[in-house]
Length: 230
Image 1: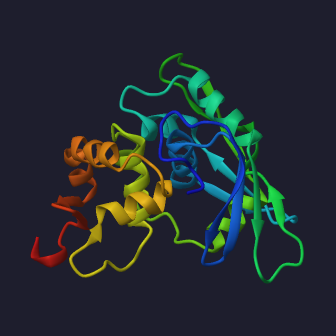
Image 2 (image 1 turned 90 degrees about the horizontal axis):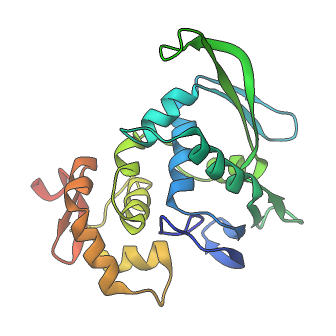
């Protein structure tokens, strides 16, 4: 629930979200498009450097990030807007083992790297990016599964609720017998009080895209392809 299950997220003012590791809250605007670009950066990273304060710096090819986000490619202005909103959002994490909460962001900065690659569009060179992950994101990744799936198919789903459900399920190693109940997963990613009927309808509209990811809608449930003999 760090990212709202929407492609058009609203501004949050810091409601607490409980997890098995503690609780966290977001002040800012974070939706599934922001999750798309964070996952694309993590997936496309070519080098990693740990920073003394607990942050991490990644070397990333922005062209690969754009290709991961969309077949027709995001414009740099779209990416810049998402990165600016990621930079502006504040995450507060409270964990039992710490006396004081972690207060930080997901991304601290994105700057051009001296390293370059040939640019086939201009015939010149293009700079790679140095992306500094904030301590809050690094801490969250330490307590979550690593990103082993390709985020590109998720970024191509039509609806934000479908993206949120897909990310939730792919973050679980084991599957309940018979799969997950749709309503349970919808509540898990969006909280109580949402429009359940609309969410179910949007998931059905995204059924082909979910199937491409390996997730099958089966009546009132959703399960991973290959489970239950499928």
